[in-house]
Amino acid sequence: MQGFPGGLPDLAHLQATMNAIEHACSLIQMHMNPAEAESVIASLHSSHMPYQTCRFIIETSKVPNARFQAAGAIGDAAIREWGILIDENKRSLIIFCLQYVMEHASAPDAYVQSKVSAVAARLLKRGWLEFPEAEKAAILFEVKQSILGNHGSGPQFVGINFVESLVSEFSPSTSSDLGLPREFHEQCQSFLEMNYLKEFYCWAQAALLSVSNKILEHPTSVPEEKVCSAALRLMFQILNWDFKHTANEPDNSHSRINTLTSGIRHDAVMLKKFDHSLVKGLLGMMF
Image 1 (tube, rainbow, N blue to C red):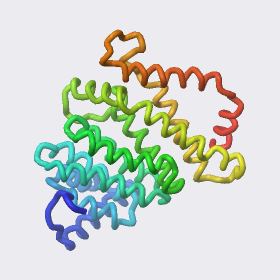
Image 2 (image 1 turned 90 degrees about the horizontal axis):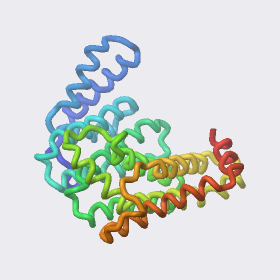
Image 3 (image 1 turned 180 degrees about the vertical axis):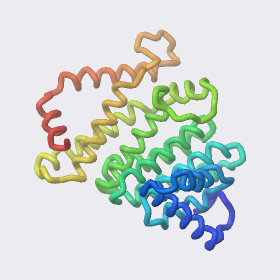
Image 4 (image 1 turned 90 degrees about the vertical axis):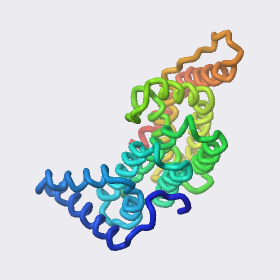
């Protein structure tokens, strides 16, 4: 992938590191030599520019826990080394994570895909105030296409899951540590609230409507049930957002905020008035 950081990889070194991480993961799983195993994994997380190694493990390893640890190491290293990465490196890491989860949407080890997706969300949040708006819009446009079902139910679920991780990152109560002052998080929170929350809600709503009929017609349609569950979860997450702006603000510069928050709150009221039997029926089929 063009712009992926880390220099030219050495295959023998990549293989040796992957073997070591896989062995450490198996030791932890068997509760054997946990200190030694944790030391090996910690060395990957703390190593300088581990991106090529982590990418190799994520793309090659047959051990889910090894892929999980490699994804986490990408996130930790990128946050730690953000200042020395060029913009192209940062974008490539985010795009790699998103492409991976989209391409492996039907993989059985969902927790690995969730981890990789969460790393993409964390890195996008880290670069939110410095990335040009057009670049963020381009990334989110591809996510939107997946959520609307244009690439199948697998990527649709993954897209919703990514946005859920993104909203969690922008919410003060669930955001991860980026080593940045509170003002950074507040600016990101305000920007997302003003410009994207209602849009995300509409995407989830559209996804929910797109699979509801399939679920009612085919009760055993598991992929669609997962999409429906994820869409409902994202909608409730947004409806429970701690809005900082209200429709009563007199400043005209906040007109878009007013429209967004009042629009979502109106949806919240309507949702509460919605036919609860249908909602309970859908949730009952999924859980």
